[in-house]
Length: 186
Image (cartoon, rainbow, N blue to C red; front, top):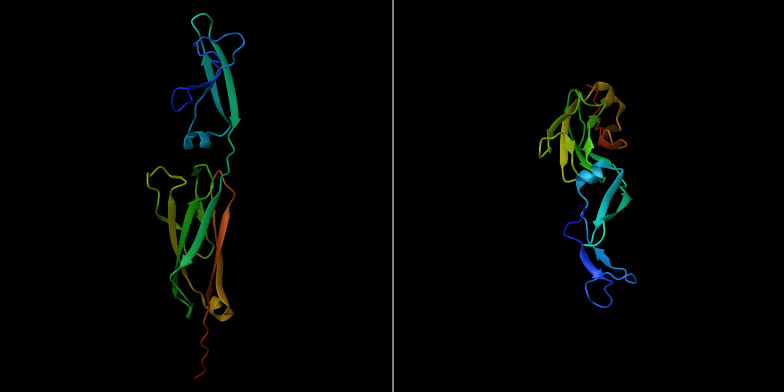
């Protein structure tokens, strides 16, 4: 049942009489294309073949091939803001989340301590099933309002976003935006 097409005779009928003699070993082959559902299920790719003849009772053989799951998530943080110049400046962040493993991911979360509120899903769930498939790219966004403390500290406005799923280990991305200080005395 796992063959993409009926098993095809390959070799073994040494005298070409289409009869399986005691001294012959016939070989049949077929291929199976692994589905995403089978990858997501994990465990074993299990298949039972049945062989029969006019004279015999059917015989079966089962083969179990382990399914190796490699769940992985990736996130890239970006902003259209090139530099921070003043307290109260609103910095928009965009988080691009992709599935870089071989199984569908569920329970996607995106967290960033610099967001004014939790990152909001924007787009990417093409089939609206709330599962991050390998071919999908999900986008989240949030804003951060720069504080005077951050401006006074100078350096970079730096923070890290974390994306996670039920199946994968978390992934992070850090973005540094330079803080431009303009001290003036009047």
